[in-house]
Length: 140
Image 1: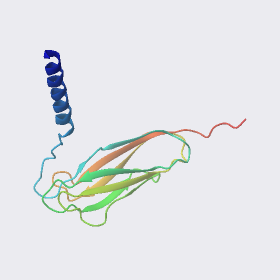
Image 2 (image 1 turned 180 degrees about the vertical axis):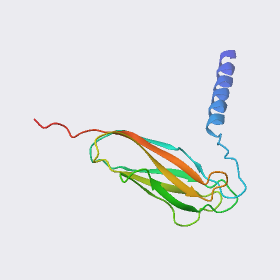
Image 3 (image 1 turned 30 degrees about the vertical axis):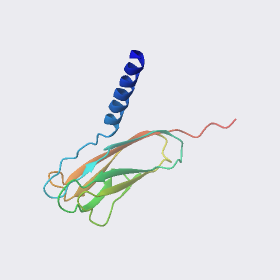
Image 4 (image 1 turned 45 degrees about the vertical axis):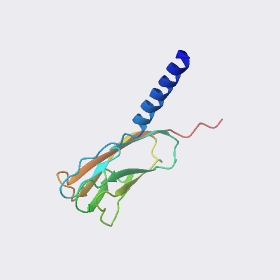
């Protein structure tokens, strides 16, 4: 009987501990004015095939109290083409910065996308993409 009670107590403790870990949410600090917090500031394409799909997305949230307006998004070269929302992002809402890398260029790459906005304390934000494009396989 003692073993059964011990087993039940351990099972309840284990379930409670595992549920406690999954319900934690990361709190994003609120800022006065417009804000911009990215889920990640670097996208690693890894190793991809020549002419593979080069589209990726940077997801962000406006953690401020005023609408976020993105005024420009520029790639560090012609091979990196970003897209950004044209409409203001409301406080608490998510937005997406799209980026397309030209995967017709073989080899390792590290490129940046510079975002200009009305975000309080960070009017410009630099995001990074990196990876390696493999050459076409040799045909025998």
